[in-house]
Image 1 (cartoon, rainbow, N blue to C red):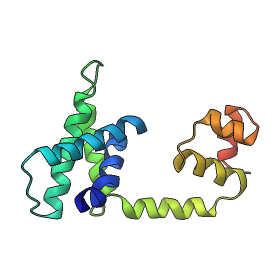
Image 2 (cartoon, rainbow, N blue to C red; image 1 turned 30 degrees about the vertical axis):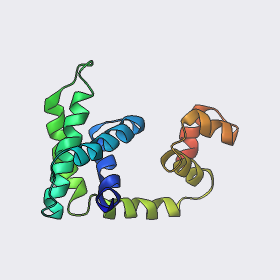
Image 3 (cartoon, rainbow, N blue to C red; image 1 turned 180 degrees about the vertical axis):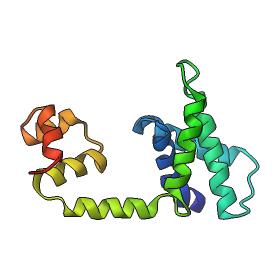
Image 4 (cartoon, rainbow, N blue to C red; image 1 turned 45 degrees about the vertical axis):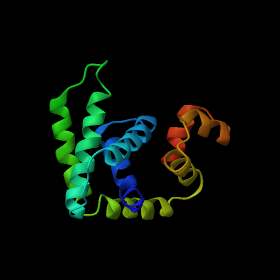
Amino acid sequence: MRLVQRHQVQVWRYVRFLGASAELADDLVQETFLQLLRAPFAERSEAATVTWLRIVARGLYVRSFRRQPFQLAELDDIEAAWNGFAADDGGEQRVARLRRCVEQLTGRARDVVRWHYEERCSRTNIGERLGIGEDGVARASRGP
């Protein structure tokens, strides 16, 4: 489905921005698009589609905290920050700038950043790859 391909990454980034773990974000994105299939949805415009997906994803995120205390007031502040981050392109320009920054890194610092953000490796896993402890991973990510 083209709609999923166009918006999946943006919805995932949005729920991660709200504070969802990577695993929870995966689940929330899947459920968001399942609701799209279940609900009578007519794509009117790109902006309306993005808004609908964010409303659904946010609702699912809030419901994921039924068993845990959660401050909804904080979520409103996070939502406002997302609107600034995402602008008109879902954050694509900012992500592209971050990728250019990572390309300027060298050696261990570049490896650590890529393993953590692209491969979603834990500090423990990265430390094992480099033969250093978790504290060393944090230092290695800063470069020389």
